[in-house]
Length: 176
Image 1 (cartoon, rainbow, N blue to C red):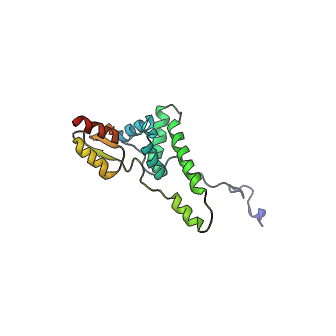
Image 2: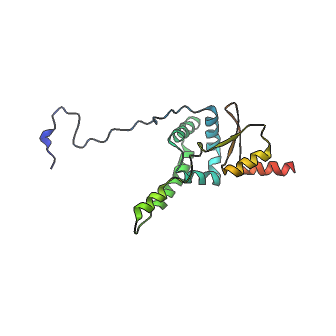
Image 3: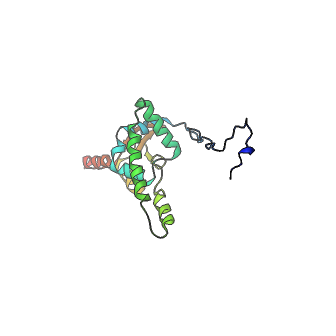
């Protein structure tokens, strides 16, 4: 039984005190490079709707803490508080969570832990980049070998473009 007489009248701790709130920003350094901001903006503008990108996000349970915070900050800044892209992403993740939690039977805790484990890296942490003068064949080989989508075209840390599989196929067809 709880002993109420142990609490002093001017005490700041009550028997029902909620846990200390966590800070809103991550403890990690949050400063994003110009390339990361440009990529996040292009991601928000459309590549979040690419099925392959959404599958990668579902496998990784979204992005790491640093890039998730940056994703929200960029979306809120450029869309004036309308968080459309995070709504799409988190709806996907909640559907995956619902399916993962629909489990029963023997050894369900171990099976649940396996279902909740990330199956891939953060989308942004796992990105591959090439220089603007990289030949198309090398870009195609990078895409095939790394299995990552998309490939960033960077020059001096600045994002010049984003290349996907369709871009490589188109360039190879045009090259003949």
